[in-house]
Length: 110
Image 1 (cartoon, rainbow, N blue to C red):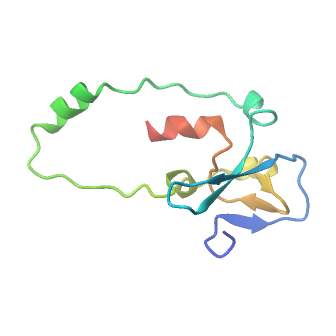
Image 2: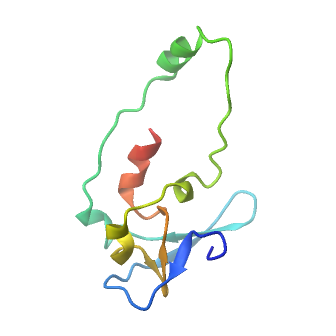
């Protein structure tokens, strides 16, 4: 994760958020921060209603050309602001991008 620029080593952090290792369907692992007990209660979440599939398909029916977006590791593709560095520490590293712990990230992928 350091080589990919997802996390960066830091000397200290004011927050300690537990790590959780979750197996993926393909057998690999996902490293997450469990922000439920710590971070998430301090974050204001933006709520966006999910559109109905019928509405999405109706909007797509007039197009002649479509594209496909690969959102593999989608949350790890969202860079966070410098202010979040003190909240996102992983061991002695801090995330450069969003992680699975923050409840606010779900609203980005509406």
